[in-house]
Length: 224
Image (cartoon, rainbow, N blue to C red; front, side):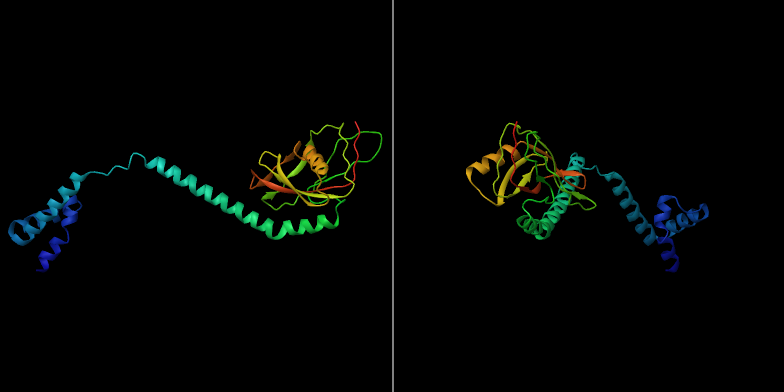
């Protein structure tokens, strides 16, 4: 019995040719004399033949495409999660603080810029001075210039605080008046300035994303 168990334990190596010559002769001699081991070995050899006939399995033809789609979806979910985290941070901490600061200092420079021109005979284009609210990986929109004509006469008799929506391309696509007069004349002046202004877009880990700018307009007059 012990001899049979020892022989059967070597069947796998024997089939693979991984035993010594002396062991091969010993196992072959035992198989000729022992019917039980010979029958067991025949089952092992048939199993080996069946496995070899199967051959290697081929991957699906669209496996590469499915992997690329899955990777792309995962990258999109990761980027969207980071953007959601930043938007939540902005809405819960930065935006309320900026709104309070802007309401109290309507004529001062507020985060992203203030339009300030000296009244005089020398015309100067509207300009915004911006302070960045940045972290290591995030920056907010910054005013660059406006293409509104300098022949326009802008007159904000009362301070106006505006929250502007800046697109990924750095253009204002919407805005709302947070505080100050909201007459049709004021909105027309704001349309003329904001919708023709160019900003550097907000960046999130180096990727341009939509952002918001809090702008303060005080009493200004421009002559061409």
